[in-house]
Length: 114
Length: 111
Image 1: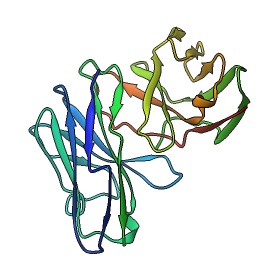
Image 2: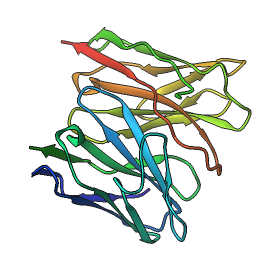
Image 3: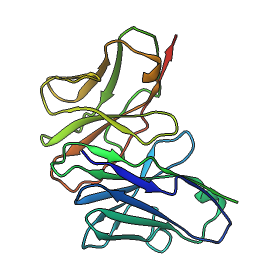
Image 4: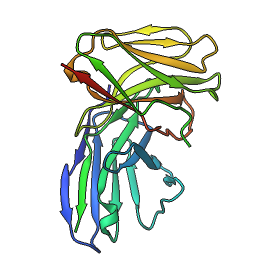
């Protein structure tokens, strides 16, 4: 199993600022995923982050807006840059177990942009 | 695009069985069928997964059609704590395909 600590759990930010969300895993994992979930909606994949390589972004998400770091096998960050109210959402990190047996999720970061 | 389709919502009574369907007609031979659920204000949690054979665990049962183009998550006795959004997704073990979630089924459990 994998236990994920995601920080912060929530934040209220001003328009134009940036917020970095951290995701710490208690074991080494190859693949980490970042999702966005808008109120009442399903999860939308933002990007896949593998250690030692550039993150792979999904259509509609760009590195300048959502830069991701993956310095080692247990840690990743997602930055939401130059925020606007449309970025208000829940952001979730997720990892795949080493044997690809299941996905594990963080508890999410609820972001509100004023 | 999501590879699975599920009903938007379902309703059940407490202590009754619940059958949550999922269609995945484009499933490939290496895709595992996974189910996750998301309780309010929490991240999704793993429920069960399978490849070809039906699977049971302490949370639920998974019934997989013979052609694997559909599956059903079975909660044998629904409780109020089972009220959640249930997601069915396909995962290729060891692959690098993006993990795309469909819209899920919101399960309401009536007391």
